[in-house]
Length: 75
Image (spheres, rainbow, N blue to C red):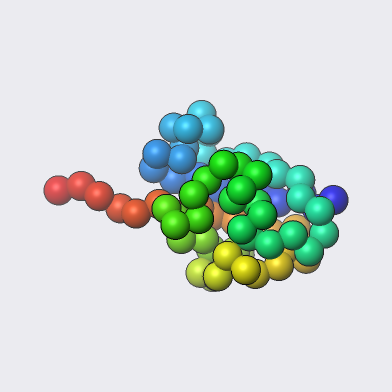
């Protein structure tokens, strides 16, 4: 298992009650698998791994900092 730091923004911060959580995932899991584990719709967020926007098919082979970025709204 690999421990990832997941940064949460906007409504996701409210959903999880924190701006950051740690998530254990099997080695070489995909970003999509992490989103499914967290019950986050992959169509709802952009994902940055170690400060780089990535596709959800990316494999997570090392401990990473993963930012879940929901759409921005406001006026």
